[in-house]
Length: 304
Image (cartoon, rainbow, N blue to C red; front, side):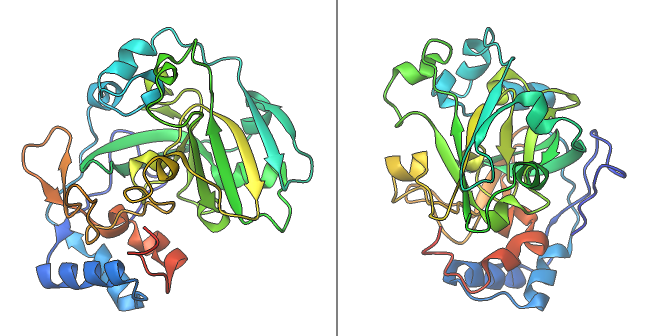
């Protein structure tokens, strides 16, 4: 698999990636993922030799009008309408916990002068639909280095703005507000992990998490916490909103695994928005070459 980075990837393109050429290899590798078997280098390499089908960028209108953002409503179409008057600036992000100097950061202070990345990523929702989105943002690792966490920090917790006056979906107790998510430190430091500030070459729309959201393309979409106002470093795995709300369906890791079904539906296939036929879901959403080693030896059925 080849991931092209800012110097060679226009926002309008994505590297061609296909489905498996050998179904037996796919089933065997997916089974290894489900059982938590350590992936040998040859097995990881097999995931990268795909061909025959291109990933096309999802139309901007689809990506900005069909999305989950419960702070602005539970229907896919509600966030675009209910977030239209949201004012994301000025914005402050508070850094807490195991860091050298915990304090609030203005948006420009936190992100200013960090190199902006253009990354076109496959994005997979736990509800078995997917998109391909061109993001703009900064590597989360650059922000982490800027705020100087202590060596004892093992996890990073993120919190969304809680303001029911501005976010009408929070007036209903559909989730335990405010929304929280987290990553292990090695996941947060991985070069694929972005703090997105834009998409399609434009500032991040309100309904997609303005002004700052997390993007981890090998995980299910609910990990992509939006409108972040707090970053907390801790030595313990933090609670996360969906895991608190329904732990049997939503785990902390949320790695895309086609061999582990959601309790109410299969994850083996997905519907790419804009396409009629369903396609096979790729382990780690197709980014196994880059991230499978993070989970070496883990039981990925238990740590879902």
